[in-house]
Image (tube, rainbow, N blue to C red):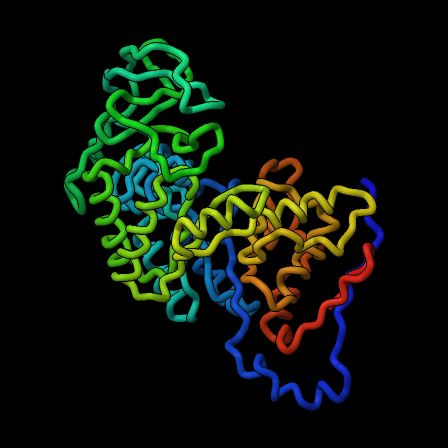
Length: 424
């Protein structure tokens, strides 16, 4: 490993400036906010994570965390599923379905206890909403479908044929409680598996089309995985909107993350956001996951959404990843062509370990954006029990986070004038 030789310096105000800090606009501003992504992919599937987070709440509060993004809490297709393989929106670990009553993270009662305890401490909870697809269907159905080019979804590569797909959801463990909606072939636009032929491919279900208001990668990026929900169907829209209202009656949430936002209808997302803010108030926080290395698609999406939500700054994450792996990288351009909105430390774009303290300093100790710290950096990763990743920043991330809470205020002046040494 080659190390980049540079320092990041923090500058201090002059004596004269320090005497008049109380006159600056930021002096009486609210405390700096900080989000925590409170999970990582390899958290043990012991159904104990809600309890772990509950016990850790005072520690999170002590380092300045005031909002927690929790993992998808709906029932997955199997007991160890992280929730992105979502089966039932209305099962938060309450019903015996898919091999377990609890989700990977715990029971509904433990989830409610966590959210209530967080609320008592003044910590908001952000829900991770997986609304693009459904997984773990209860039965197959036969229907006509057309295979399309995976790299150009608007191009059909075979004539329509009858296939067998996993699209039937009857939620037998829950029955009609909370929602009587059952899903079948009429509620999905695509799948990626023909059960009858044991063949993988991207299939568009006849009588349906891809949503037009999605990302244009691969021609049309509506289809991502599993059984793809069709939001042109009024029953689908109504059921998901009803779920959003039901969820916020079950849990006093402060916001929501929209998973895979570029893969389903933007117009429906706007409808959902309007419904959520009608229910929970205008300050209900919404952030979208729109993973793209360039800024323009992110800005285009924000404009398309009428700026109703925030975005994770995937371009900045990519920049951190690139600089951390490039010898002699120029630090002066580290924020060039980025949104500097929300920074998630996510495994999608790896940042080398030596650079992580510097990356966190850049997002935690500056006045732009709203940073997010990562559970895996606080506690380490369990990707391989023989060689687990230890907490990043040599265990000093809590100190950096607390420094943000206590000291990162006042007028900021940037000194980005040398390629290997930047400061503010």
